[in-house]
Length: 151
Image (tube, rainbow, N blue to C red; front, side):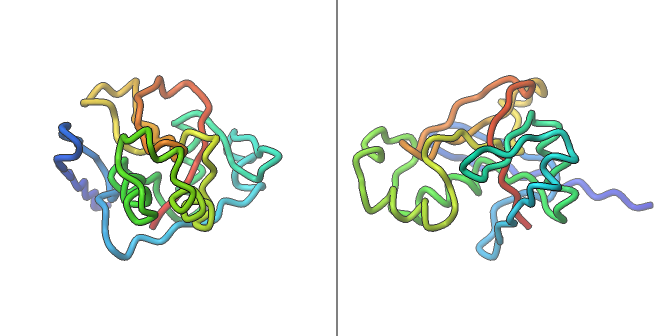
């Protein structure tokens, strides 16, 4: 069996991110709808709003079972930019056009979204993106956050 690991180094917002796996941002990334069944069978839970939430390890498995991968922090930030927001700008929260656009793409402003990107190589932490204001934070992979998948 052949294993191929792609290492993507991207300079973004004053930080360098290293992402392992096939998760480098591309113009033709497509987002995958996660079924309630896939979410729950892989240890996640489905919220009233229809979002799959899970710990990071389960999020990776949920995406795998959906034929996709967990997105990199760069791919999540690309959504912010595509919707007219600015990375890390708290003023995004007051931009109604931005809010409308990310909601049309299926993202919820009240949730943090897991990325595949570990926090500066520390495997116990990963970046999450909060669409409401376009910011990112790192959290323990043992916490439950919203899962989105891309291929």
